[in-house]
Length: 500
Image (cartoon, rainbow, N blue to C red; front, side):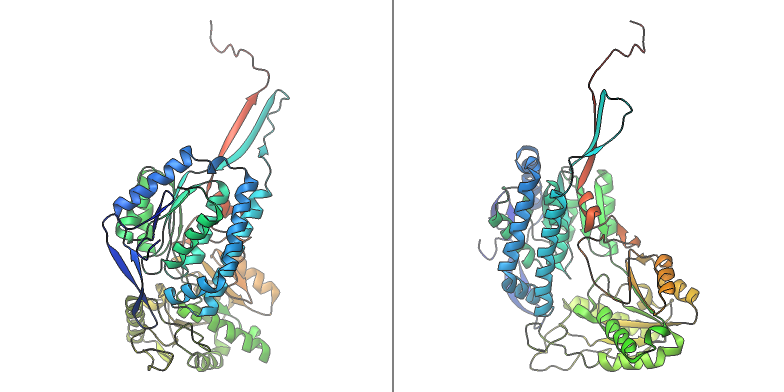
């Protein structure tokens, strides 16, 4: 395929029907380094038609489970083979460090292997006791059909795999639209699916904007399921469009995640150091551009000053720069728009009374940090409260707010005082308190004395405005299936309900 042929429909790599293209910028220097097809509604319609035909007439939905699992494992092997190349592409496209890009590839390979193992380990169905030897009753699972997938810009490859792997394991066909800002590794993944031998029309991709391509993927009558990961505003529009066709919908819409630290977690020097280090990891990995980022530090008042002082000191020593440079710990924000949004939130917080402990500005240029890049310093805002915009809304930038509490009940109230409910953490040396907090916190994932680990076997999703549905784990596979009850009467007889 040429540089502009990033639309894959029915087994062919194509340019946009309109001929339009889009430059992809490296956020480290704002210079273009790739050219992609800028698809539109016509391209989306063609991709959906190809996926529909492949599902209704093609072999994939009825391919034996063992063969589907084998293909997923082959894709995982190909990802391992191309780890360096794809990791570098993810680093340049999304602005993250090269090591983060490599880890993302590893996690994607793990996801494909997990769903291969999960689907092949299942039985033929769940037998339902009908109370008679003459009745055979079983519940079986079948693929949903044509799946639309819309993924975000922060973890483009990882988020694509969380949708594609279970969808293929279940026997579906799909059309995926990656973010127009970071599409390149999703294009590379589709290429690996083709190399692995996936039949034509099963995997389709349309690169293009959300307001045209994404909207069409949500409302097209031939689509059976829509899976969206992104912001609340866009997710609401996707849900509304899908509702008109009564489609299955899975939405992951972000979070405003509390990291609750009790004083007893900091009673030893090792405990204090670990809690501070993990608070940095929670807030600033990938420049805070993570849906599960621990951007709200909620800390017991008795240790607040010491903890925040040490945290701010370490935060301002984080090395910012191009992700491919040695020693760089944090890359740029993904775009100028995202940096300006971050600046707006910080300015709003300071106007509302927050105290700036570090950061709060663009860094000085350096040999690893071009002046044209979208860099922003890790920022710690102390003395924050719930009424502040920066505390209520998802920033998606390197900004950590600090709130304090005195009692366990107050800690729970603060942690749950959010429209979102994606993830959260609690740090304590008291195992009873840890269990109580985990039960009472209304978030889809609770980490105890840790932050950010994901397990393919677990289920990922949230409460409240963090969305509906689950990814990963058995529930992630279930999202891409329909249940069918098959009731067989082995000895049929007349019913005689009516005279005749």
